[in-house]
Length: 246
Image (cartoon, one colour):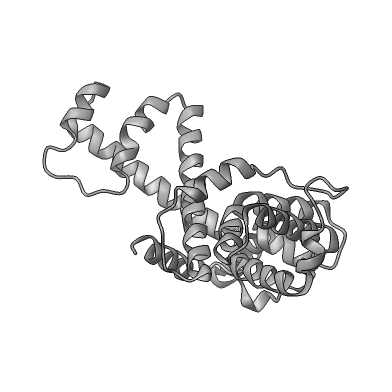
């Protein structure tokens, strides 16, 4: 019975994950799959933009190419070419973009923003500003893409965590404790913030523990939206965390 329950759980997980919805409906007309693909693209477009810039393209060319790539992806159902056994949305996007840059660069650079295409609402000014202040790096473009993918995923999980606290009326608690999420706390380290929040240091420590636990859950949920099997989550998490330690 436990085995059947486990299989049913895996099937349910597969059916509701964004990326697997896209894969399953890759050859069909599905509003749900289209919406899921658009959501993933809106979330993870900046790592692709950085990748194109690191490949040596000028600002406007990189913007045009990135936008044209998403137009191509959303309008031509190119996602139907994805191989489920490869698993990760991250890998699919980068492979597809490389093919696009090779095969359709001339056509893509001729497609200017707003040129009759269905475009995603992407904030190019903020993206370029963020790109310009990034430290110089000798990392390969592919490695830079993966690292920014990891950063984007963590940022999204953090934004969700804050939103949960805002909705619960605990935004002040979150804003004061979020700095403790990714650092080791020395003895007595909670006393200052505990006084500010009207808590005991022990209560503050418990709150941070719960915050960290929920953050880890949200990170895993974000990863789950970009892989095809539950067992891939931990490997992807370890890989992405290793990039952030460099």
